[in-house]
Length: 275
Image (cartoon, rainbow, N blue to C red; front, side):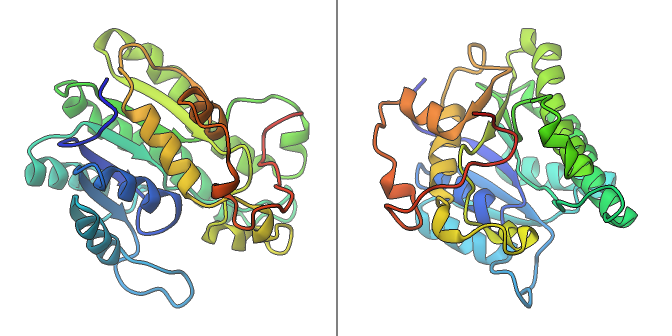
């Protein structure tokens, strides 16, 4: 496939900031249409960005943006977001399931409401978004669904300290595993992308003082990796659990210092990766 998303229409959840916005901006530089679907529509007291500020950046980057208020936990909100995207841009080629909730707590320390939030956002939200987009993806040329989800790793280490988050995040991974096979003959690609090292985003707040941003990489490595996946032939690239470094090495990139928050500092490995 041509290494460009020019003319493609993407719907990216949780794209008002962080990795979702970085993926949206990367596509915008190709001249893509991007629906920024997220909850933040007015300035947050702590977190940066809104759906409207993200759209401004997308337009400035050379793409065409559409701001959509979305709660991935709500079926009507999900279906309305997809309908708005298709009506505005005339179709849909790519879904990026980026929206996610995190709390790394053990069983006795995790409030039930946070358990419910993670499962409603990560698992239900990913499933609902994929389901609502599928009728339009079936009509698209080179359709892709990309979930920001880890490889399925059954090492008990990754369950011991935060079993609820692990189960919720693996729910996104299992959507890839199952839907890739379910829609393989229809030519819709379902893949997962996960960072080898921790990424410096607003989500670090949920990790409290366990991660120093200087030991992280920037969102751009995930944006570049996602772009490389989404430009591949959907019939030949499905059911994969990609790591950002690996997919970029396959494109010929050998040096990764430019992605570091502070080049030269040791990098912290992300969750769910052994060795």
